[in-house]
Image 1 (cartoon, rainbow, N blue to C red):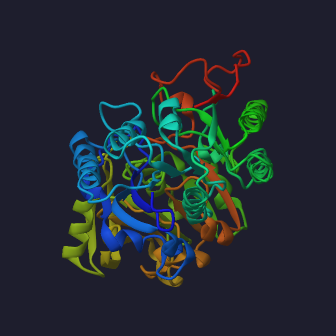
Image 2: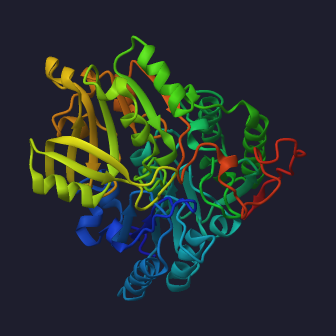
Length: 500
């Protein structure tokens, strides 16, 4: 190794995939970066920064996609093959590799694909290259994956406000290790047979808040380099899907003891995890919203959340909204964000702003309980250049009273491609003001920071879809059993960590 300028590669494929969604993720869904464009993805590697200059960076390929259904085999093969081919073609060997992944990717026909990927990479770069991974706390850590990595860390916040900080930590740990010559740390790994949705494990509330706060304390101990807890990914039906703990460091006794304590604390808290917001059926949440003075009132259409892997076109919620006179009379301002339907957006685009259109919306990827829904509305906004959604149309349904109040009516955002609505600017770009609305219904789970800040009140509707929050309705068959909450009376598991 060149001690003064180690060579460090960057690669990874990042997506979380619901095996309960009929959506299929293809190459067109991924944003693929290479070369200088890949380096530019990381602000902490900007030219002149200490991390940028301390090693020789070798950007390979990184692919990231909005969460969705399983990745098609040919898509994975194309991306993975390019990664290994590029690594095999390097003129000089690497000293380290930054492996930037989510940890919950599913590829049809595979059950532990991140482990498959890093093992195929290891076959090319060899066993001596130090590999440091950054992961989402909703990822899964199998024994194979943990064993193939040298360093690994995960987000400590949900919502993931520390995503880039986590990546920087993974890189800094790797670079420091290469320069110190300390070599591989010890890794204590243990799985915890608990599988819960992210909306029950948000670090905004207890017990996750305190559990994740312990990681900083553990990390400060002598002999510890990093500590991480994964809640696992609840909407994939694979043996690896469960909570996990990894503690890394140079003292094997300390990292083993700390991993065991964290795992035991997680297990002890299993029944204390609760939804981050009050929940109910869609009808119950709507009744509460319509009688509440709080404005804007937010409702999460959680079962079809595209940022968890939902298809984005389950139409049951929209059908219910259209059948609610209090929302279609024009007496209130209601925003529904959003539903995917490229045919409907094309019809709206052809008709133009101000035209009245009759469209059948949604239910074409995931038919759900309602199938395509008939919607008659006025095209009140169009956008053709959304970098994520492509063409976007706002179709407004409102009665005679609609003219009495600017912006009133039920505003349905229809998109050409799947898109999360997390930012205020997502709405204002379409001429919609969520702060002035009475009711905002979003395909989302927990509210992301900007929406959380503006919501005067909030309910999480337990709606159907590929990321149904009621896990017992989904029919898991491939996870390891017993598993909490599927087996609520299961015996205490063996939580002895293993050095891998």
